[in-house]
Length: 260
Ligand SMILES: Nc1ncnc2c1ncn2[C@@H]1O[C@H](COP(=O)(O)OP(=O)(O)OP(=O)(O)O)[C@@H](O)[C@H]1O
Ligand SMILES: [Mg+2]
Image (cartoon, rainbow, N blue to C red; front, side, top):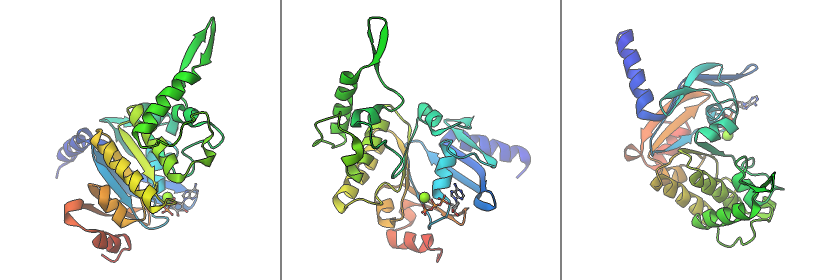
């Protein structure tokens, strides 16, 4: 292929995908966490991002959302090159990330966590104050839509919530604020069987609502249940990319383990 054709192909990939990460390398001192990784997410697609411990999965999504800076490579979101200064900027652009532990602020209320960084305000005379009542109402409504029904008090802090409830808040928040991409980094790692089913159902619902999702998990069965495509990393490099129709959970385990 000549250079012009390669460039045309690349432009096509950029336009066809919601996310395109092109040749991403990330180093932490001497540790090479990612080396020339390509990664894409289509519109309305659920991608299972898989790989063994230390493969570079978290680093990849944290590079996408601006938590880390890439040493090499380019990132495109919605057809434009981006380089988010922090996850806050990524959120504003439509990328919501839920980490297992860092997604919510423990000592803040459910309602404040739901609105974090996007608080509603109202005027009392010349003074602007947070509109707690309205925020409580909207949070309660949106969270009941993701199945968080047994929480009545939006002013309670989130530290008593279960892992599943926390994930539900992150997912409900993404949907309410119109995110186009939801990133879930091992959302089910500490969940019970019932809560895992709930979170996986929410992932499918997010897709039904038009979102794209990056789901990081160690569980091939979970990934297989909800993802359309699988991207497997190994030692910071692309290892395999498989469509759902070409694989099954047992096969995926073999690939993740590097035996296939
Ligand atoms: N902040 C950091 N400083 C130094 N090294 C890091 C940092 N973050 C990640 N690494 C290293 O980069 C590599 C990739 O780590 P990463 O957390 O992305 O892997 P992972 O695929 O998410 O693994 P896991 O499944 O265990 O979460 C590992 O060798 C890790 O030790
Ligand atoms: Mg990780």
